[in-house]
Image 1 (tube, rainbow, N blue to C red):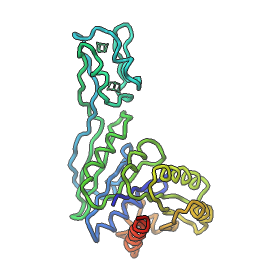
Image 2 (tube, rainbow, N blue to C red):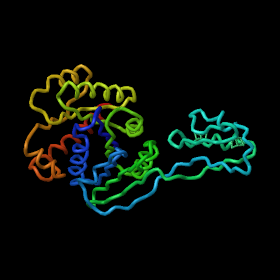
Image 3 (cartoon, helix red, strand yellow):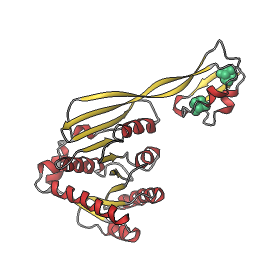
Image 4 (cartoon, rainbow, N blue to C red):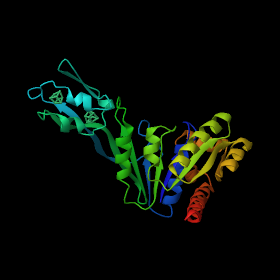
Amino acid sequence: MRIAVASGKGGTGKSTVSANLAQSLSETQPVVLVDCDVEEPNLHLFFPSEDDRYPVTVDNPVVDGELCDGCGDCGRFCRYGAITVINGKHSFLPGLCHSCNGCAVVCPPKAITMVPREVGVVRVQEPSPTLILISGVLNEGEVQAPPVINSAKKRAEREALVIYDASPGIACPVIETLEGSDFCLLVTESTPFGLHDLELATGVTEEMGIPAGVVINRSDGRDELINDFCAQRGLPVLMTIPFDRHIAAVQNIGGLMALEISGWDVEFLKLYTDIVTMMEACE
Ligand code: SF4
Ligand code: SF4
């Protein structure tokens, strides 16, 4: 089972839900938590422990100036505009390169070689015998999150129960994270902004055909906006986390409510059970 946790915007408590769900599940079975928010991974803050690091590379073209005759075929081929040739001189923008190898293939004198370039790392931690945390980390200045997300997800591909913590928003990195997920938990807040972003995120899960449910975070008890929207779109509200000083105090020091506030581990286990029940009903 692959459960993605997403939100249309940052600051909704998505990582809090991911971390608490993983912690609660790890009390009963092995679980792998994958931090796919590679531009700002933060799940390691909940689970301080030693890590192993694995570089993530992408292949980029390197031109041998001795062999190149300046024909320009590589630049004409590259549909992403990553490589251009002006007056026989190359310019290369690594952020636009999709490592397709096409320029190397079309180069008549075979002057292009694809060379690996590190764009990030994957960190693997084992904070408990039943919990593995895998975090994708994009190097500073790099713009291509998907290869790092993909690499982090691959490390968990043989595991039975995996939670993907997506980056906020609905851009490419979120699509890459949701790809292959069996279910998506959408975390939101009961505000007009929260509703707007939930609408966008719901559109993505619907487009990708991924069943989804909603967690309302920091609820002040007046959740009509979100509840009405969910009812219209057939989205179940699976959990409501109240706006509560005790919860906020635990979170402010990087704590887990599932560990430190009585009853919340059971609530997160129930959340998982509800997801499984929904999935079984879909089959
Ligand atoms: S590898 Fe593909 S995307 Fe990258 S520069 Fe060459 S043709 Fe363009
Ligand atoms: S296709 Fe090859 S030979 Fe032609 S400009 Fe590009 S690198 Fe040089």
